Image: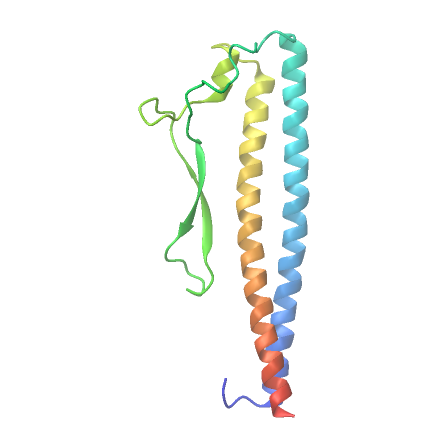
Length: 161
């Protein structure tokens, strides 16, 4: 790239901008997916609350100051080696099984053994939302990297004038 001509730099910048626009489109789509899934999950929770009644989950069951802390069933991890450029980090969503010894509990269990289907649907929607959030974070990381490369190419092009 040190010996690249101005035309080659312009062609690289054009390709980079096209890829950037595709990433922006993907980012918008993922943003809409997250909003839709979150809203659907909230509606399912509202339906659960309506069908089970306002006392289905009492204050005794909800966490308070003296409640034993628990760990998340889904965590975000940074992958070490991906097919993309090593300069672009990649995030992934890791799922962990319910394990009382590790402090991983399923809060939907607070609704009892016979959970309504709407509660399970809400849980599934929120989990899918997490997948979309992590995917969107990866898109934004890549987008930021592309914009940095574009800026570098633009500076290089200005030097060639």
